[in-house]
Length: 292
Ligand code: ATP
View 1 (tube, protein in one colour):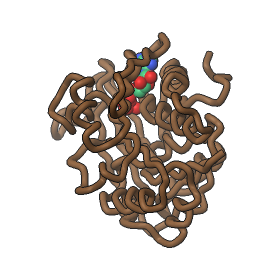
View 2 (cartoon, helix red, strand yellow):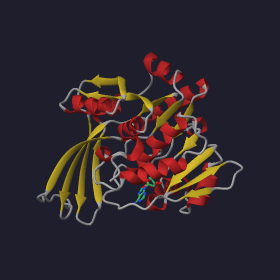
View 3 (tube, protein in one colour):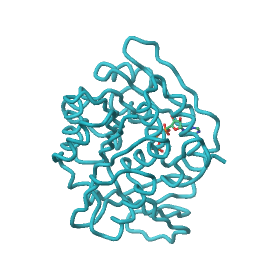
View 4 (spheres, helix red, strand yellow):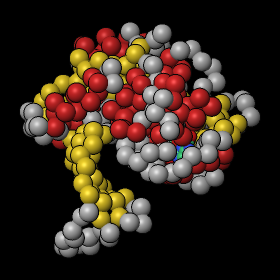
C-alpha cells in the first residue's frame, strides 16, 4: 500500500447550537456547546486512516491547550503526526453557530495554520515517498502550490479539494490529478451551476474531476470519457458536517490501494458518516462497524 500525505488545516471546531443566530452586536443564549477536532486536512487524514490508509499529516498546531488535543485526535486514528509542527501561538479555531433551522455560520481564525507557508526538507521527503497527496485550501496558498508542484515533479498524484473556495493560485490546477469540488465550489470555479457543464470546464485543466452532490451522490468525469453519476446510498441526514472530508479521505484510501474506480466505495462510506451528527467524530471506520 502507498502512503497518503495530507497537507492541510487542523483546528478546533467550537460549536454552539442556538435557536436563532445572533445579529450584529447581539448576544443570544446557546443551548449546547461542543469542542470538536476539525479542519479539512485533519478530517481527510482521519477518514483516510480509518478507511485503512497509511497517512502522514503535514501542518501545524499552536502552543495553546488545543494543540495536544488536536495532535492526539490524529494519532488515535493512526495518523503519523511527525510533520505536524507545534508553533508559538494559538491553534486554528472555527467558531461555529448552528441554528434550529440547520443554518451554520462560522468564523475561522487560522492561528497556527497560517504559519504553514512552504515545505521544508522533511515535508519534501514525505511527499517524495508518498503515493498520493491530499490538498485543500485552508492553508496559505504558497504552501498548497509548493506542495502540488513538488508532487508533480516527483510523479506523485495530487487530489485537491478546492475548499474553502477562493480564486485558485496561478498554476495550481496544472499540478492536480484529481479535483473534488462540491457542486457549489464547482459553480464558483467555473460560473456554471450545472455540475456536468462545470466538470467539462474543469477537465480542461485537470484529467479527472469528481463533483460531490450531497444526498444525490457524485459525478465522476474524466477526459475523453462519458461522465458517470454515482448515486449515494440512502441515509438519514442527521448532520452532514464532515461528509465531504469523509468522502475524500475514503476515496484516497481506495486510490492508495490501487483501485481504479473507487467512487462507489467512497460514496457509500461517506453516506455512513451522515447517519450520525457531528464532524470528525462521525467519520466512518473500515468495514462500516459504526454505521448503525
Ligand atoms: P461538507 O462541506 O458538509 O463536508 P461537501 O459539500 O464537501 O460536504 P457533499 O457533496 O455534501 O460534500 O457530500 C459529499 C459526499 O457525501 C456525497 O458525494 C455523498 O456521497 C455523501 N453524502 C453527503 N450528504 C449525504 C446525504 N444526505 N445522504 C447520503 N449521502 C450523502
